Amino acid sequence: MGEFINVGKKNDFKEGQGKVVDANGKKIALFFKEGKFYAIDNTCKHMGGPLGEGEIEDSIVTCPWHGWRYNIETGNNVAMPNIKVNTYNVKVEDDDVKVEI
Image (cartoon, rainbow, N blue to C red; front, side):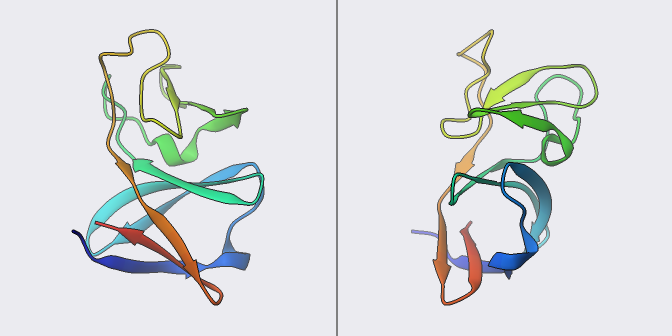
């Protein structure tokens, strides 16, 4: 079991948007959608684009560099499900958002 690292306050995140956070030196793409948090690796498997800066629609984030799309709940690439980025557990304690690494 990993350790939960505080990555910000709940009010730091906007509904329907992603943000790149640092969890003990690891860059994580954190998304706030419909009142729930989702965390995946920030690095796109194609050419390393920053997924946390991508646009999300429904449960899909689009890499801003070349358009690769990933499900923020599962980490699976939409077009090639055998390609996957890591997902991370997220919890909110009081107002603190924490990611398990």
